Length: 216
Length: 232
Image (cartoon, rainbow over all chains, first blue to last red; front, side):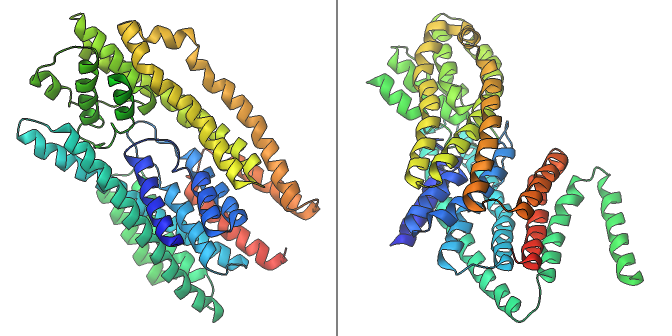
């Protein structure tokens, strides 16, 4: 029952963040207060909420940009810390890292949501008459479903990955491999960020990859 | 009753948010209801044209809506002022609500919610929504009353200064929150206090240079290793 309520709450968070209300139900600190009460571990959730709220405060949705899904980060981390016995430093790091890592694809789902809305709008636009009420209702529905599915699925994946990687931790295979995987993922962002012409950017990067592999 | 329905409707107007017309669909829907509430007849073409690109801060959209209806009634230039005010109110709202009010509400809620999550939750939601709903619910009538001079209302209340006032309060409260959390959670431990000072200085140094998520990932590792090796 608790998890059903949490999943429904995820839908509400997504609606509040993405489509309607803006009552700030989607703020990480609010998410963590509510999940803390729901799961019965308010203290842990409070600390998790602090971290993700800090991320969200800096990453502001100025203009048309989509900020990183700090609400999901808080949702997933609170759920993870509620259902797993996370007590040691390496477990903290792993739990937080996985939640942060999954914020990226979940943020991408916001972009996909906006694209779907755009397609719906253009579909109506082509007909020469836009049924605004229908579009708004569909938008609300999409946002709710996105929350339920994406938040739920994301949290389940984090749970599975955590258990998988945690098993390795117990076999004394350290976090380094995991860190390199994260870094590889983030390298993509760094590459995007670097302001060099596209071709040169990827050519230089590939040359670096080859040189690193061959020389070291 | 029609006005109340309009205000409720304004809570949902962003539902079709997209990169083609942003909040245009919602604005068109609200224009239809707002005109009806003020006894104005709009033809289908006008309603259709209002689905064009529109993007502003969600809490201040009702001011533009009221202004639009007034200008339309006066045969003025509703669409010209809609464009002008959407960017101006977008910037004003972003800097006050997103940039300043959220941090303050968070800090106050965190202090009060440390021992009582319910109190923290209620504090955040009440403190924040008291202001945001006040702007939302009064926006339409003020916009309608002042028409294209609606910006005068914001000048009158010195709205562009509110952010700096709140930021000053937030800075103080943040220091308070940090001391409170350390005292409650760790107590007086010279090693931890020293490390926390270093963390704060690192945060200050890289704050504007490195994306927060990257910084966070880096610090998670450093913290993990630190705790692992020191056994604190």
